[in-house]
Image 1 (tube, rainbow, N blue to C red):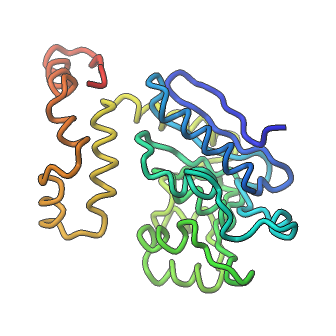
Image 2 (image 1 turned 120 degrees about the vertical axis):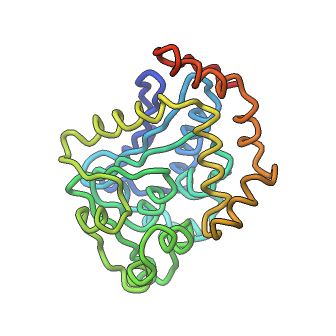
Length: 259
């Protein structure tokens, strides 16, 4: 039985992790998740992905039962890395993590790999790895300090401190928190807002954000203008870059071609 289900909502693909009791992720589940994110990336009719979970957990992270049965901590989880997304650096479309509950360890790292996090009021985030003799090396160590204040990120990594949903909002980890019964609708509404933008512009924005993260503004400008980000050049030279201003002047909705 598949641990991952897919549902299309127009231009949006909802990827649901459904592996009771805790949506833990082993190698097979990582490969299923990667296949889902790859389907999002490769289908020109899809614009935005949403990843969420069922039940009390968004994901408990690495399946420790699989580990106990011999799955190594450094096992090959496929081209996208752990959970199919944490090392999927070539993904060209945005992903929203709709965190329905507990995001633990690798489950938290899966959420961190998304472009945006929308959280239920029941969401909790923490990295327990050091208490288990391992490290959050599927993005936790690398991404969390870029998102949270350094002291808070270090405390979470070194002590396993749990972050409540309201704290996560205040710290800038999540973009919004909502009641559980409207979580998916909220994520879908946000995805539809993203999908209103030009595909090439969205892709270029994501790649520029990644390429300039941590740089001073002047250095970031040099990187952006250097020609080293092909999607930026493609956006500037696109038909869509002409269509947007034309549609605005004519008082109509733009018709994006993705070229």
